[in-house]
Length: 170
Image (cartoon, rainbow, N blue to C red; front, side, top):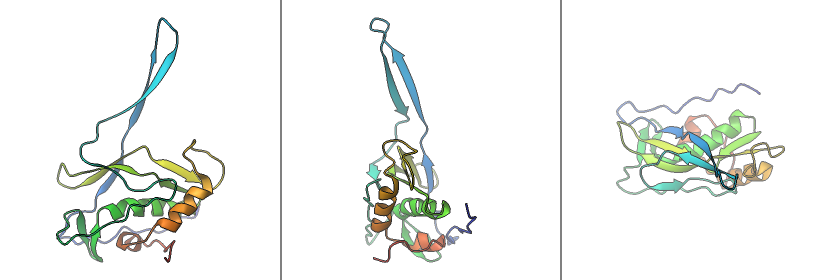
């Protein structure tokens, strides 16, 4: 892999800090029925507080950031005001660039948690799409998933601040 110099966006010190992206831990519990001798597996995660939102998918969906006049879901960067959701989309784009276009982390969904000093995205159940094979299970849509994200994604100030090349000029 080529090492890339991807710099984080410059943050206006008088503004809030950009949101953190956290992927929730999950656990699998297997319960065995003594009578039937069958097993059932359960995937368990912590409850996510707040409004659950799908930000992008492994089939090309990318949630567009809508701006309002008094938008509280944004942060001021040196390059301008940025909708917090833009950081989630830029993460998918960053993975694509950092892996030399070999994979993308998508199907990003979860909540924007505003508890605490700074907002953070708590994300669950991501999908990884790779160029070759289906290395990450049924949700790995391979090159088709990568292409669909690249077609749908619109770079914004966060992508620009990270020094990411534009993947869609549309």
